[in-house]
Image (cartoon, rainbow, N blue to C red):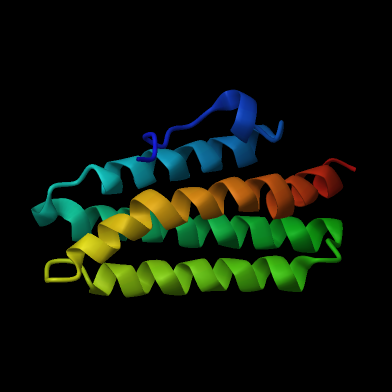
Length: 129
């Protein structure tokens, strides 16, 4: 069984205060969605999806500003996650709610850790230069 997902300063901080604050908010919204009763799941997914769109738009502006060479790949990854979140949101409230919950507790935390350690870490390093 997986341990509950939570923000971890040591593991998640990229040392760019605005980026770290956005990621901290993402994790908080994800945890709220994970813990939502069925009747509130769709609303909490809406909040997570809205935040994630804005989060990714901000990172795109950062990538453009610093001339990140892997921008196309990074943005494609963002689009994939937005599409998956949107698909999961449409599956709430029915027999597929268990799938949505598994996605929120298994897939997204795993994706976040990997994305943060690779693509976002690269972006933060380049942006600091």
